[in-house]
Amino acid sequence: MSFLAFFFIVVSLVTFVAAQLILKRAMVGTKTTGFRNAQFVWKATAGIILMTISFFLTLGLLQRFDLSYLYPFQGLSVIFITLTAAIVLKEKLNLRLAIGALLISVGIVLVSLS
Amino acid sequence: MQNRPSGFANPWLQLTLSVACVLVSEFLLKRGATEVANTDSAWSWTGINGLASPLVWWAILLIIASFISWLYVLRHIPITIAFPLSRVVDILVPLGCWIFLGELISPLRWCGIALVVIGLALVAKPIARIEERL
Image (cartoon, rainbow over all chains, first blue to last red; front, side):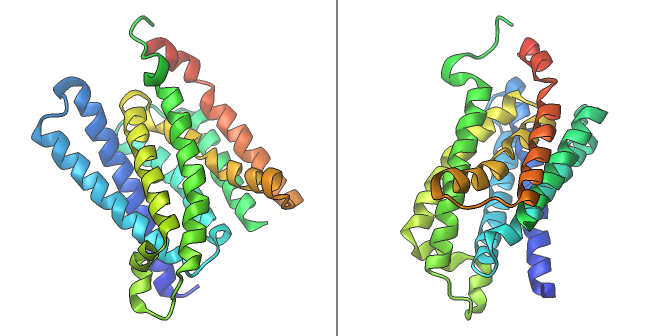
């Protein structure tokens, strides 16, 4: 794998994780303030832009590599999102959830390797 | 319990719909992207040329549908639970290939599928408690 490929895989992963966290924050905010406020529009727009960047980078990668090769990296997003949601969004993370997320990630990697 | 969204508004139903749309879109994207692949062009790293395939546009429609469902899920379910559960799609893809396309699944892949199922069960366990709070 070339450095360029690695770079684009990492960027698509980071933008995807960031988008999920921002969108989660935007949607939770609507419970108290509704949809018609600048905070929601700003966060939802940022989330959608990041998701779009991640989508097109993945499409570019799919043209070069097999889906089965790219899947392990998607599997890592489970671990990243679970950990960052606990740290950034202060969501409760117990041992059961952490082990569950880890098993899902390892499982996805094994499914893609074989 | 009395405020729990029911019927079509049930966040767990929306999570299922979101996963189903992603599942179909994954197959459409791979086929569409391969159909129009032109890896000689430097621009193809951005994936923009994938838009030349109608299958990619169908996939985009499904992704938008899944995205709307997903936003609704995010509003009601913690992301530490919803996101790992949404990755059930990662075992549904090979299982779909096995059931519908007759493709073989290697022992290592079965082990991976088993790990994901155990992981999903662990993550899903606290759902009963969240259900009560909805």
